[in-house]
Length: 85
Image 1 (spheres, one colour):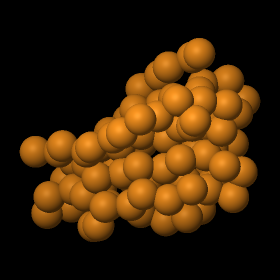
Image 2 (image 1 turned 120 degrees about the horizontal axis):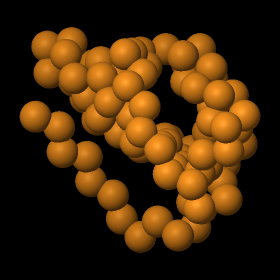
Image 3 (image 1 turned 135 degrees about the vertical axis):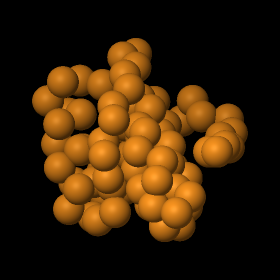
Image 4 (image 1 turned 90 degrees about the vertical axis):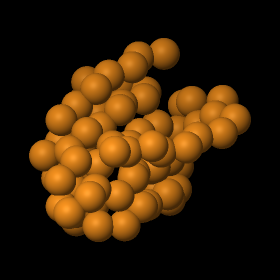
């Protein structure tokens, strides 16, 4: 299992998420912790390919953290909670 971190600077659009997924597949990262997502609302969805996207909300457009987990390891997740201050 490969883990990584990434300062994404923003994940406010579906296009930005798609680009990130392409990059993760190329570098073979199974779980990536992302920061500076700048999302207005929390997001927890299963992506088209089975990946799990769990992103917390930023405060006043600043910050925001989350995880993106590729399908190869999603079945191993028991629980998850985003805490972003």
